[in-house]
Amino acid sequence: MARNWNGNLTENDVTPEHLWLNRRQIMAGMAGLGLGSIGGTAMAAPSDLTPNDYEAITHYNNFYEFGVGKEDPADYSGKFVTSPWSIEVAGLVDKPGTYALEDILKGKQIEERIYRLRCVEAWSMVIPWNGFPLSALLNQVGVQSGAKYVAFETALKPDEMPGVSRRVLDWPYREGLRLDEAMHPLTLMATGIYGKDLLNQNGAPIRVVVPWKYGFKSAKSIVRITLQEDQPFTSWKDANYREYGFYSNVNPQVSHPRWSQATERVIGSGLIPKRRETEMFNGYGDEVASLYTGMDLKKNY
Ligand SMILES: Nc1nc2c(c(=O)[nH]1)N[C@H]1C(S)=C(S)[C@@H](COP(=O)(O)O)O[C@H]1N2
Ligand SMILES: [Mo]
Image (cartoon, rainbow, N blue to C red; front, side, top):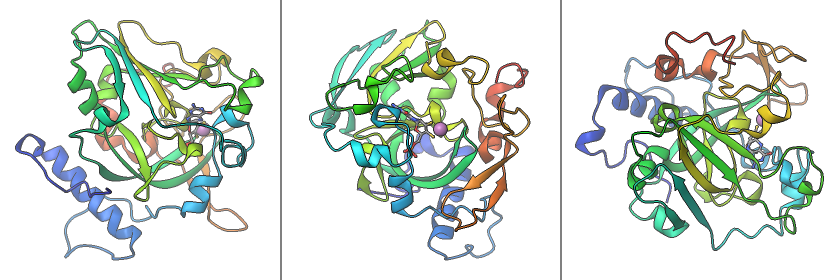
């Protein structure tokens, strides 16, 4: 099921940006396998993009519907039923409706994308996702011209989610993106990790991954996607708008009110965890900075 990002390019895919991303992805993959560089090709890929091991990726999680402890999602998500699954696509689209997961996956090419995940809590890891660009789904349903934002809603099943009895957030967990962010080729609908179907704790069976934003923007176990004109309600901004903005692009220069975002703790780096400097847009600035031209990112945090 897993396939590399260089697989099956169509003519439409062959733009300079895509080619660059391809090489970067291949390199990232090779770095993960310890293969080093391809015959001297000039390469912008970060050399330290080594995926975390499966154990860390599946046992150090935030999924508050199952509890607020990092191991709670692994320990308490066993009752969560993720099959059958469907996503309701609503709002300003040509083909609204409830789509079975199988129908969403039909014809979608599953790629591997090795991305950094930077949590707003100032820790990070590297995850080899499997999935398809959100743009493929949005193109399939036909986004109408009035749509400016995409809203995501997570499943809310209190009988299967022991964490939601505590009102840590205004459930269901909701997130959103501007339409151009949602259409960006880096924005992924993930269905797997390391070539295996997502486990419940990682957002089975399907979740969004937006690698240049703090992790909470990447909503798990999505059941509804709405195209709309207005900026969507988002759970964390609702919980505390001074701490969590709508954009929440990774930005080492904008501190969280209670801690600095300049550095991050590297999960899986040993008993005395290493810290690394946090990069603007989590290292994806070459690809995404142009989305924010002319915006004050300190105000629009
Ligand atoms: N539905 C839902 N999605 C969620 C969360 C959550 O609590 N509920 N936590 C977010 C946060 S804070 C992070 S850092 C990432 C973690 O993803 P991972 O556990 O797969 O690494 O998921 C995000 N998506
Ligand atoms: Mo997070």
